[in-house]
Image (tube, rainbow, N blue to C red; front, side, top):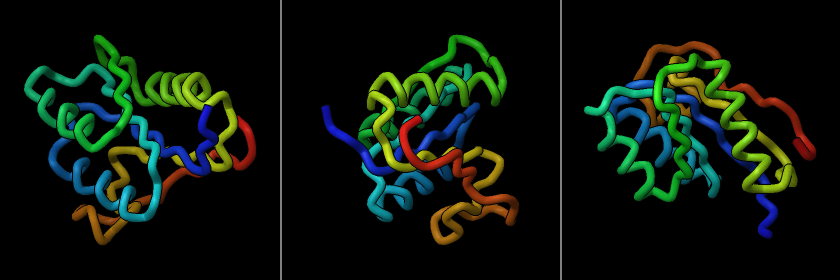
Length: 121
């Protein structure tokens, strides 16, 4: 099993192309493992999630919208399952906080990524 240094978790509902730009920016920073939770997005957003798969993102899908908290819990469970809890750092990007990588996302400023800890999750 590969040990990953950083995992990025992104809960998402009905995303647009800015999510693709954000993922490109995260990947350019050297993050190799990005997990996106599709929190019950409408069918017309399936192409965005397909593009994310093509960018090697791991996608977890909720059949219906369960809310941001449930999406984050799903992402954490999936990250632990995939990595055995051996990542060094875990960041959660919220879709209402696109300024995390301001050079890659064109949205007004807000909070930045939530770092939920270092060490094993």
